Length: 104
Image (cartoon, rainbow, N blue to C red; front, side, top):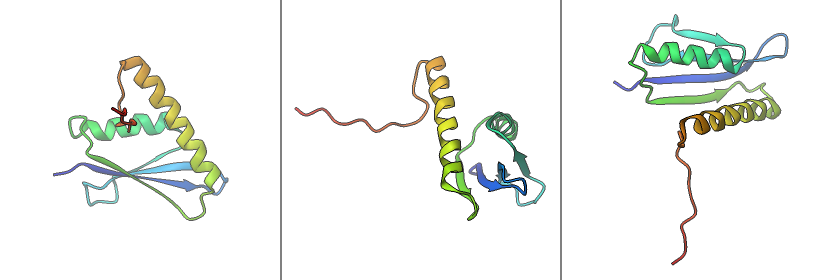
């Protein structure tokens, strides 16, 4: 069984973004968490992943139609900064990176 989560970026009535995190492995609607910042998102995805021994096969990203591009960029930038900090701390890349092949 593949463990798949969906993270959907949404805009609230107060015009602030949040991420709706859903465990697609479970068919019930009770498996949805709402995260109002990346700290909360990180905590919730770790908690949900712990139910599967910390192994998550895939996180699918989506956004509602009313989410402006600048919000997507803001979240993407914050996540890149966190990834860089984590990679520095671990001393290795945690995401696959394409490298240009050296010419022979």
